[in-house]
Image (cartoon, rainbow, N blue to C red; front, top):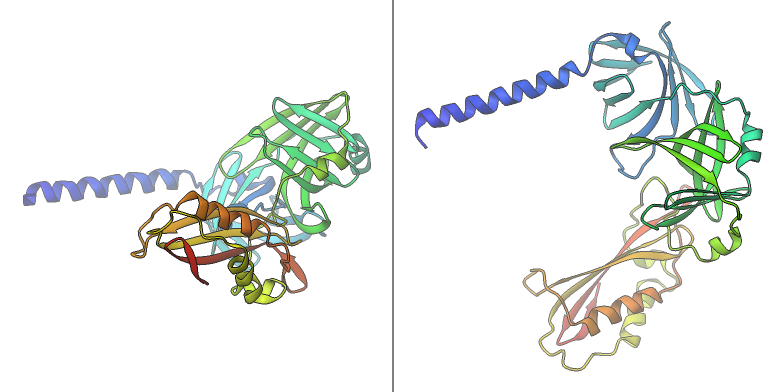
Length: 357
C-alpha cells in the first residue's frame, strides 16, 4: 500500500469515528427535563441475565426517589450536567437519553426505560386477588398463577417456576418475579408493568435489554393444576442474578472429590472398538441452590488441545453418569445458597478414563 492510500485510509477511518461519536453525543442532550418522571430499571451490564428491579422518580426540584421492589423508598439528590449524572455523590456518564430510554455508566452500564403513563385503579390486594389461581394465554405464551408461584411457558416452550408479587408506586402497578419453587425470599427481578387487569384481559408492558413490547393475555377457561405443573417442571436456576463460582467442586459434594472420581471410575465401562480414542473431555454443568443439576455440556479435545469428537459410547456414558451424581451440597455464601457451575476434566486413553480432575 502506497503512502497516499495509507493516509487516505486513516483519514477515512478517523472521519467515521468522529461521525459516530457526534451521533452518540446527539443522543445525550444537556436538558435535565428529559429525565423528569418515572423510570424502571431493566438491565445491568456486569451480568446479562441480571434484571434491575428498581423504580426511579426524577423530580424537577433536584430530588429523586429510588424504590427497590420489596424495600423502602430512598430520597436522594440528583443533577445532570451535560452528560454527567450525579446522584448524591455518585457520578455516572449518561450514554443515551431519549424519550423512553436512558443508559448510564459508572463502573458498569445500566439501562432504564420510562414507565408507561397508564395508571391502574386496583390496589395491590385487588390485583393479587385478580391474578391468584388463574391461567392466561397469549399465542404460545402461558402464565399460571397460584397463591405464591407463577409458572411461565415461553414462545419456545421453555418453562420456569418463580414466585410472584405485586407492587404499586403512585398509581402505577408492577408484576415482578422472585425466588424459585422452594424459596420466595430470594433475589427479585423481571419487572413488568401492569397496564390492564380487568375481566378476561391482562395487559403487560415488558422490557429487556434489547426490546420493549406489550402483551395482552386472555384468561383460560380451565385453571391449570399447579401441583402437576410443579412436578413436571424442568431444571431451572434459582438465581435471577447469575451464577457463583466456588472453586474446588469436591467442597460441594458429599464425600468430596474422591466420591466424585470413584463414581466414574467404578461405573464407567470402556466401550469396545475405542482404541485410539485419546484426549480430554471437559464436562460442564450447573448445580442449583437446592442441589439439582442441569445445563450439561461436554467438549472434546485431542492431546494437542485441538477440538475433536469422541466415540458416542464414551461421551454419552460420561453424561449419563454425571446425571446420576445426586449428592450435591448447595454453595453457600453469607448464609445464602447459590447456583454454582461445575467443571470436571477426563483424560481418555484408548477409550479408558485414566485421570479425572
